[in-house]
Length: 179
Image 1 (cartoon, one colour):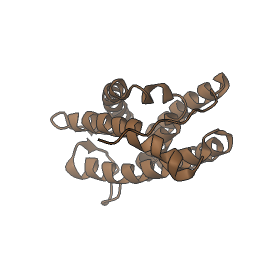
Image 2 (spheres, helix red, strand yellow):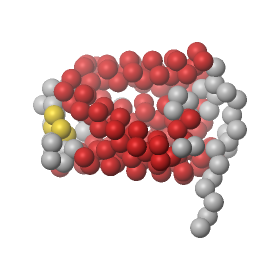
Image 3 (cartoon, helix red, strand yellow):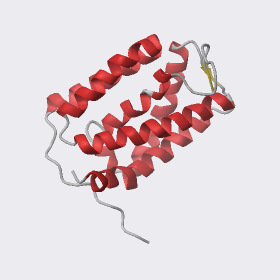
Image 4 (cartoon, helix red, strand yellow):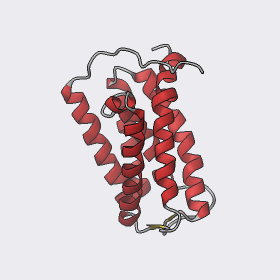
């Protein structure tokens, strides 16, 4: 069995950066679920600002791209299968505002929730619970709903995704980007 790649030693992020990271994520999340596609330019502006300020910009950009691709597939599945039902869904491609959550989440991995990466099982449990509640609240605010009989799939997806991110994706992102 191969050894898990280690997270690189990084300088401790300043408190102002950690607070900005969390605050911007929450503000963008709320804007996306309440405004929809109208909030996407503001989220893109934050992502670009994040790249400019982040001490791990290369890794963050890589993770944002990977998470955007995962989000496109996952949200397409959620909408197609009926796990998530939104009132203004048209066509097979998920709305841009829904996909925008995924790279937004990636901005947290090397910063605000980095402490969970060394505790992958705890992170997976919190991701399962937090991910499900995020979808539940977001669907309500967006005028949609989660199918009660299948919404557990979201919790399982987020648990697996966080665990794999902690043990493989985030550490590899530093190797791929030569940070």
